[in-house]
Image (cartoon, protein in one colour):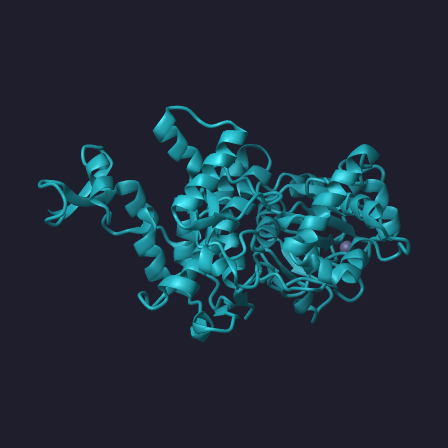
Amino acid sequence: MAIQSQQESRVGRAVRPAREAAKADRNRAYARSLGWGAHLTAVRRALNRRRTVWNEVTLVTETAKWQARTGLDSDGVIGPATWSLLRVAAGLAKDPVISVRLPDSGPGFYTYPPGRGHHRFGRAETIRALQIVAAAWQQAHPRGPRIGIGDISLHGGGPIRGHGSHRLGLDVDIRPLRADGPETPVLQGQPGYSQALTQELVDRLRDNGVLRVHFILFNDSGVRGVRPWSGHDDHLHVRFAPPTRSGASQATGAKAAEVTTPALTTPAQPRLGTLTVQVPGPAGGTPAYRFSPEDLVWTARFLIGEAGGRDDPASHAVLHAMFNRYALLTRPYYRTFHAFLRAYSTPLQPVLNDWRAARRHMHHPDFAPRGGTYGPRAPAGIPKGQLRTFLDLQRRPWEQLPLAARTVALRALSGALPNPVGNATEFGSPRQYFRDRFGRFPNAEEWRRYTEEFARSEGLLWIGPVPGLDQARNTFFVRRKFARLPAGAVRILPP
Ligand SMILES: [Zn+2]
């Protein structure tokens, strides 16, 4: 059921006025770089549809409240992580990860009302958390009653009839339990209502091991772990926290490890986007490229091998540099995006391309020779091979890849991932190059000078600081000829 946004604002944390100006500055930069400035009316409406007076400061405070009740860090800044959810909540974009439908019934649960399956889509983690809780419930209560599950979200999320929330695949309505058998509605406190079973349900939900429970709204003050809210006598409204970073870090307790192997397989028919170059001139003549399920799997593996598999701006940046590189530079040489990834990325190469890398690793216990040696330009006797860790990564099936990497890959290839690097096609680590040369890491000023100097010597331009993007490890550069292209020349059109 609907949560009223005004009432909800009590949940939010106040933002200190002294810091609001700096936050407003960051929002101004993000409004341009992420593009949400063009949708300000919809953004404000999604944050608080009742507020009529808006300025940069109220935008910060309303954003902080929205972040707090959504389960994000509430800094009041609409950066990449917040925007990726807010744009869905605002109805500006569908989120392809909200695509798993809870079956009409299964071990330990039924759904209500009948015929409303289109309101029961969630993230894979949400559905899995519910199924785990219900299956354990079934074991504990083999003769019933089962758990009654109502609305979750629409396919792809977004505004949904009859609710103010339920937009992100993270809200679930669940009936309180009855002690007397029938699987029908009951109000807390009515005859037939079981406080003991309802308490057990709350405890099991909070202990699901997949997703952190952000809050549960329900009006029986005798139940621990819920908070009262008007309109919540006949159902519990469960809000899970979004699995933004690594899914595992969100889970509670010792069961956290389970989250790395959820029963999510390659979506049977993942809805993937099309890579396009939207500029006049020769580059604009590049034909559009439609991503395939194979690209999806290799993209997730790439994220793990190159960027640690995290869902953060740094890995979004690396991925966008690869999209730019493929679209603007290497498309003629590789028939598919994953062929390009496998050639470019050291961890994804079947055999290390570079004999220097092989020479570094040839005596390592993890090195697996693959037969033969490198060609005449390499010193004799260096065996061709690859590290076993990387070979394992290359073989690991989709369902065994960490959830965060799969989620980012799916969002990226369906055009839902913000691009923090513009038209950059290159990235490298001047911090590391500095260290190789001077034997120590640079301070901030040295790093900046060295980075600019490095760019000049390579015929590149540093993209400069980007709010929210830490470029210490990977620093991003644009080729001079692409610096003149309009921002966002390479785009992934959603399916
Ligand atoms: Zn609800």
